[in-house]
Length: 364
Image 1: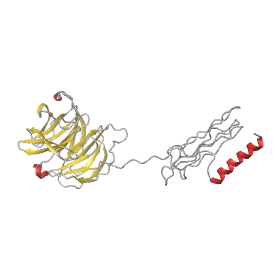
Image 2 (image 1 turned 30 degrees about the horizontal axis):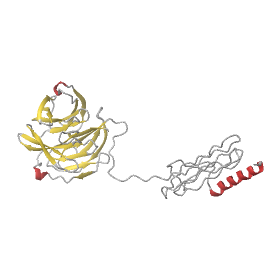
Image 3 (image 1 turned 180 degrees about the vertical axis):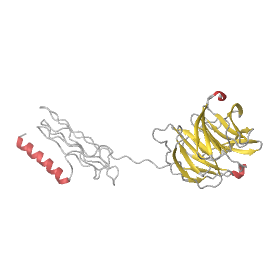
Image 4 (image 1 turned 60 degrees about the vertical axis):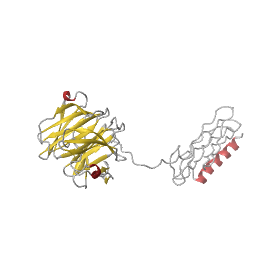
């Protein structure tokens, strides 16, 4: 091919790019949004030497902002010293064909492959409740000032808090999927969005089962009766109480057993062990370790002397225990390993507000 013809073909290509407003180099890679219906692909590399030129690779199609899935402009063929190659073809979903380039051979290169169309969006559903970036666990407490408070599990520093409107707030639990549950003294059950603090009452009816006095709610990561985990609720029958599992989705409940303590707060770990925090008056408290299959107490441990006018327990790899008196709260962390009575009780510190509920989870 003569040098004159080469120059003419190159001028045609540049004129076409200027006329269509498309840049000489590509703007879009696969799956990238563009302000136009796809951008030009990158230059392909022409073969060198006397052989026919190799084809230029077509860039994947861009996705215009209005017509999802339309193709972009195929790649320009490589510029060499010889004959014309065929540029990459546009997407079958509507992309423009690529422009031919000049290669270092006499015959045309192969055509480029078609650009990809845009992918469909995912279906809707309930938003996932993820932990903060880098967090290993989450810890929330319910204050007597009617607020849900997120705490740093190591320093007890307040991460965020949201005021709550439901009356007679008494207890808090956190499911392993990140849902927060709030219970009133008289058995009303609510969900709390941990991000926004929005509260919604569930359809749980406490009157049918007699859950209307000193209602407590906790969470067990796994139970023989519910491997996927369940809420734990109580029905007071002084001087003892019945403990039930409650499905968080269907709100159906089933009796687990009877505990010889009044108004105990319960949690469960991923091994199927249950732990109940119960007080003796306001001057002392104990944690009972319970076998979930037989509902027999297998161990117990006394907690440090403090005022226990308000209290709760949560589990996230370890037991988090809160005891309130005089407007302040003492917080402890205790390993859930057996035997429970041999585990050290780590004092985490003191909060300057009263805690009456707690929930925690290990981040997935």
